[in-house]
Length: 408
Image (tube, rainbow, N blue to C red):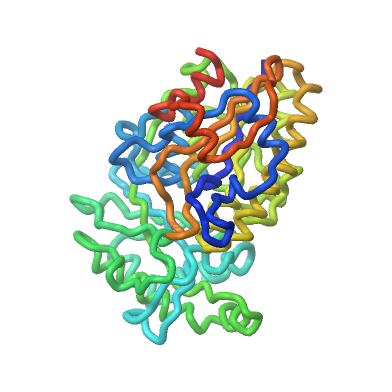
């Protein structure tokens, strides 16, 4: 028996006026996903009550770990995914390259948590030029802050043990305040002023950078400010194989998922051309799943980030198109090919958490899930929030999902 977990990041939502009062899942024709719903269909509370909803806490829970006891901060997971070691006493931070609009930092509003989708050489050059600027270097050195750069908008910052605060500053996740003035949401508490000074310096250094001038001339947003958040310390997880007796693999384009997988001993093959955006190598991700299962893995997770990113951008059609591609370019090919690897297979599909187009932020309500068994396929039925709720099948916590998938 082979097992596949499909996470459509943020596909769950609430009714949207532009979709005739339907959720994206309800409004779309999704024949592959509806086939999966012919098996078990229900709702699961992936994010425990009282825990901040996000892919970090939700996917930890889905993998079988209680974020209330094991979670030390999102950035620790992402650092692990990017091969950044966090020494005892050090504090990791997620560092976004964002897009702000405003004449001055104090008056600025945040337009994009991902710098207008910046990636590749542009992202690397901006961050390298920033971190080598004497003004920024002096501020960073004063608080023992160093940045590990990636070719995306996602970077990892580390505060040295010598400068570790007694308590973490209060941070706001940038994707939850899109369109808002930033001044009420800057870091607060111990070291808040020092980190705000780094943010201010980054804005002043990057806003007129040649890359950002070129982006503006091309009608793109300027990636002109760093945004630290998600503080954490080194984290450890019980090995996945010890928990479930299954050898696993996880296919994703985001460091968060790689970090969770690597910390629990699950392989993380990297797919060329895979991104966290709508334009990604869907076929390559599916091929990586099939290759992992053909090469001895019992279980494989495939994670698609695009619906979440589109929802954060408030892009209704983008989110709908991301879900269509999840159906046509991930689920349907998996259904067509998994039988060649093993005629007995099970697929679990779900949203890690809802990402609401109305607020452009995460939500902690229960999400729909479908559990399909090739030996007992059932008749296709609609996969959406309302139909999942109508079954009365409710899992009260995320760790129940893989136990149901593996029937343990």
